[in-house]
Image 1 (tube, helix red, strand yellow):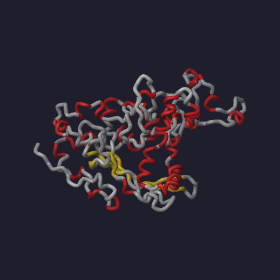
Image 2 (image 1 turned 90 degrees about the horizontal axis):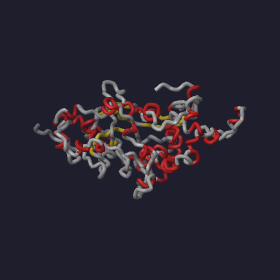
Image 3 (image 1 turned 90 degrees about the vertical axis):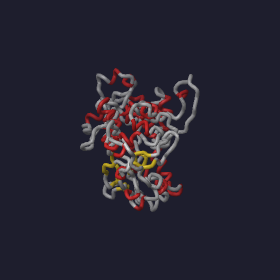
Image 4 (image 1 turned 120 degrees about the vertical axis):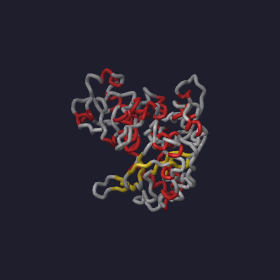
Length: 384
């Protein structure tokens, strides 16, 4: 995605924008400022990004969405806080909150970052001359933020690896699976939007793999015959009791990362981070978050860029409970294929130790953290 030129970032399409619903609203209604031909006066108390406060500026026309959105993962980054809280102690939260504000908070998303502009950290700027798009652009919005893993996998940007079959054959977009309810953080039952439906309250989602998220996309939603072993494929029938997540057979190599560290630059005063880079892996581990919604025994896992000393710039041993969560985490790679090397035959997977996260593949300092995902005994070969 090429960055926008400066003039493109602020250009309002004078022919198209006024004909849209938002174009019928006075600029001052959302951006404040003063109606005056003098630029300096006109920009007095200007609100550059009104949707940063969606409750004040978006809720008048979009009350339901605006009320839900603060509970969404995009707005609050609850997933980050969930894992930080698990790996730390309350005594260390002030330092971690400072770190979070400097290095993480800028990635949170407002309404405008999805519907009218590119996300700020990718350079910002209007997508289409200030026209508000109901559906975000997959490349300008979704993968602008979720590019290094999801975008590269889904669009087939890793060398010699095909794009996801859903994109390659059907040109499916992100929001074909990730609905507006999920994106907006719907935390209540149907009656929150549809008063005629019975109410059912749910706590806000605290992680992207939170089982309380009613809108969580699943393969089974579309491929229920395969998931239940009711089709004619022998492998589906033999694994019908949810021993495997779909990705175990239908994913290919995906990116893992190591060792992230954060600091403030002495030269510029700006926050920055460094990692040891990423690499392609395919690894099957035990399911560390087994539940009714995710009953699988084996799942794909990827190494995440967490490090015991990641936040030492802000204080010593801030992740004192580092071993509380695995560094090889439950993963749902976005590179689904119909045919994969491990699905060529039963014994392409069974007895193939290269595919499984065994203890010898985990560095010594992370063995304790990964007890829940390490495969102690590789499934034995079978007669085909």
